[in-house]
Image 1 (spheres, rainbow, N blue to C red):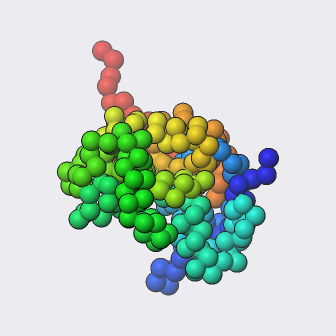
Image 2 (cartoon, rainbow, N blue to C red; image 1 turned 60 degrees about the vertical axis):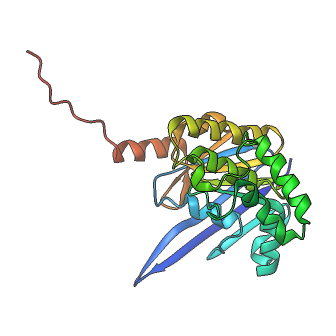
Image 3 (cartoon, rainbow, N blue to C red; image 1 turned 120 degrees about the vertical axis):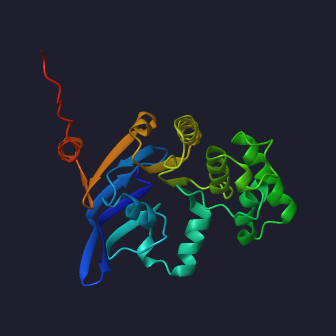
Length: 245
């Protein structure tokens, strides 16, 4: 089966004052369709940068991203916007909900840009919120919802244009354990219903739901063994100070 996403020698460099920061360093990657991939890595490893490039929210310094045979580098800004609207659903750690709108209105909002009539927008949004277990919270604003409920609204919003690809950036990062578990299960259900899901996370439990786990260090994809060795050094076991009698 051909890859849904193919990444070749992808690099991203940021200029910070007089210093260049290499967020991604010649990354090669292939993501098969209808898979659930997790990307693990410490802060600053480049995993969120990778996600934003795959979603067309930023452009690489060099390298190539091909999604379903289309090169993102060859797209102008209008084409990238269309790509994001039609093919990608984003889920962010901070939810990114509009505070003045209800859950129903937040989910319906992106469909305005696709020219969907208001009645149809609200019907689709209502159905999606019911599917994520918020049928009784349609008219609640974000401040009236728990963190887990807000993330469910964000996931429903990510699904409004029926995207094949779901990109989630630390979706459980601001949630308690129980809410985080529920969001993991919801993303797993989306995968089982045919979506390709790619999640950037610090949450080791998320890998239990994944069909594939990638590990990143210093802008590169590394082996599990290399990742384990590096993170073990970075997080040494505490030294016991107790003495036997």
